[in-house]
Image (cartoon, rainbow, N blue to C red; front, top):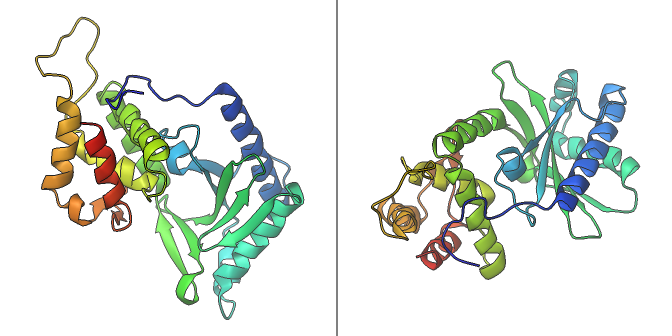
Length: 265
């Protein structure tokens, strides 16, 4: 595999996409049955993470946000102790009804499903706010509520990908592929990859049919590495998530990101 970014270079196989879809609808239906008294397998859920931002590859975990009825927020928020942990356990129990033989665990901010074939799902239960953001539970340090705006991130990524003729998505996927193939012992989160490429890509794009470039091969990859070095990411400085502008910590990811970018030169 070339370490240069390739157009449409990393694609999720049909079989993987089909299996992800089946499991997504199964989880959604279990949540709706438990919390909404509904048998819908499409409502109140959306792909988030790399699948939601269209930057996933075959080896990516699948992240799902499931919206819960707003009245349940007051119920759990008024409970004593770590009410966020109790909410995750309620969601875990609902998922166990659908996947009783799978490893289903509440962990921090999500409910994780580890399937026997190696696929992982992470389920984020959340409450929708008036401004389009979602509040989700964090069981760490006694419990708290955090906020996320995945739709803003997805829309920003889609717009930038369109203006770059697909280069944004292709770059994010390529970095994931190198990470998983060559640096799997290191940590590099998907949101760090996507936020970094969104910032670093500038006005670079795939050429349209009939266009030619005067830039030598590898210039784009060098631009990415220069951005990494010149904007302090090489020292673990934070970056902003696309669209939402939420702070994204690179503390545990910058070392691996640097290794990947250098391997692309």
